Length: 323
Image: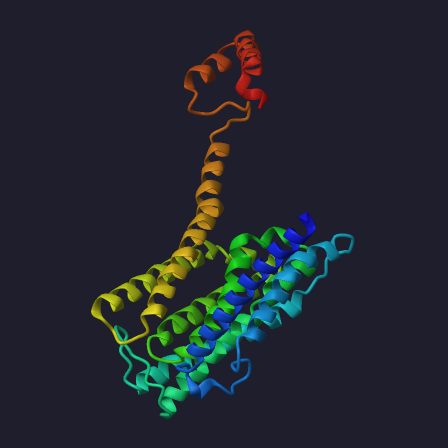
């Protein structure tokens, strides 16, 4: 009887799941009815399944890759990495220049711009550039693959994986429904930032000879933070103006930008603020291991060897020194 009850309960739950899946499918089919018909036949744009499958494959590689590499020697990809970064620099340069010149030719507004879905040559150029921006997010997943093969697992943080695995499907949605209008601005600015970012990565891949010239990593992170703040503020002002651009896209930009802003702020704090604080504390310790600002004990230690031994003995017994 218990087995029969469990089976009935399982079947009921499966029916609920099946109903939810059907509801999602119906909603998805409904949204396709007002998607951008211009991009429907472009590669990977027929449906979201290939994009979700590739994103799932990425997560599988993130999980399985380090396990498979555990007993293997790390690969060295010096010039492959340089070439890879040059390709991404060129791709982002193409995207940003296409969006800039085509939007200027189409008289786009940088404050509020609706999507026209027309076959005007400049509108098609913008749509194609946004599609290439979406495709670039697939190429950029190779960042993680190279980290895994080089056994740089410390670089594969939650921020790193979250950013790569979400940008690809989000920009599939952006390309499928809003391949134009205000979408151009976020894609253009992000491509410009990525030109700088992959320039940094390309130079660092060359090796120690260029390390003295890579002092600007901190400022690159600052630029990324400014980009997120600008994108969120732009979406907010557009909402307040009642701009004829999909409201759901505005809110998506605000919430997603906010999540990246928080994660990047956390990264900045750990990478620069905490590191600077640790550096300052280290510099404040003299050759005897005593902080410079501990003037009283420093003077006593300097004045008498016996006093120094007494203080060091007391410090060794202090509970804080045995954590």
